[in-house]
Image 1 (cartoon, one colour):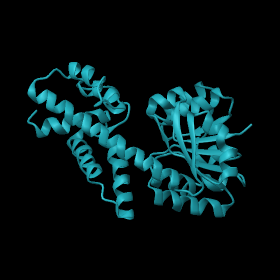
Image 2: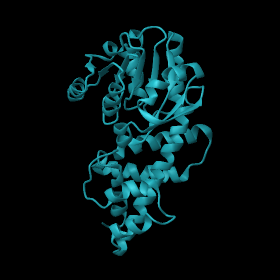
Image 3: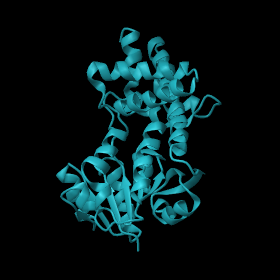
Image 4: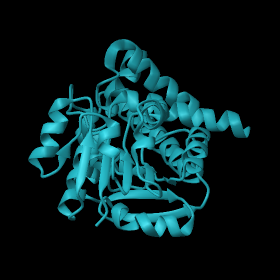
Length: 291
């Protein structure tokens, strides 16, 4: 039975760790939030006092941290990598820039550990239901070794390549579309609001037309709420669309829609709404339109 070290028990990490426990994997977790550790214990897992302690004797280390910088700190500065046994698998599931993923892998594999680049899509709903889409890049044998762990977290598991960074690039493209779709939905609803069309009626109409999108159906109802519950924060897309634009610069790809969407999320965050639900990028349009 694979022993799992789970680092990062935030909004995504907590339900992911619970799903691993439900599938019978022993999970030892670490997070700076004591409430997250208490929830893990209540679900049947064990809590560690440090990342290094969580990783001792782990077969698989799952990193669901905020960004690449935090992943590097956990692995190298806080001693998590050194604490793992030889041949342990480090599975980086956070959304990180492809180049940063390559750089992390280049330090993990010479230490005698294996590395899987495996970002996910599906949000907190997918993390809770165990229906995440997992994009994984690793040598075939390593991917097969970690597949049972990934299958406990998602129902769509894709092996997208063998080199670190390939899965991160797939996730980057995914986030480009997600961010642009949310911004486009906000623009449409902002126009409806400006001219006095009832937004809820508009959403009902659009959901049955060719203008519909998953993001419109999911985020649209929250856009017409003043302060909806947070599923994914505005600042997540400030970060993720920043990664998209970084990839564009590195590859020489022009990404004007992504750049505009990034500015809308950034302006929303800059007004103090970074922790609001990402649907509230519509507030940027309301500010522009005098609302």
